[in-house]
Image (cartoon, rainbow, N blue to C red):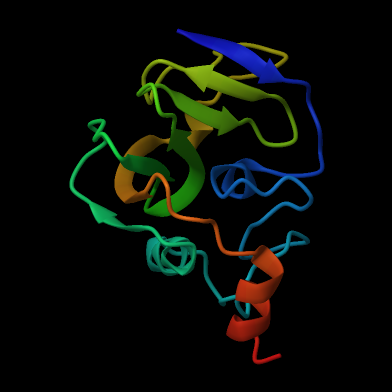
Length: 150
């Protein structure tokens, strides 16, 4: 089961939403921003390394752990496609491209038809990371400046 959480906006995307960034989209290719020099290929390792810059570490599962915030990285054909963040109540939140933000009960609970879906292009949640729920989020500009040698 899923339901809308906010209005559609092209200002940010799912990766930014996971990191609580709503003033820019993040993706390691194309016109979106990225806090490190953009790699030649979009890889799982690149996403894992960037999420680590924001305090996330690998996790063995999506199972809710009190005191932690988890993220899921969705993969299709070996490439990252989407990310979701677990909320304090165990549900998940996602940004659907330039569309709406949603809350969903399970990792696979997405819209299946227009205007919001289908979201089958995301593949499945395959990689999980976690961080302390009470840890402050690093500032995007500061992380980007360090990673880009500014």
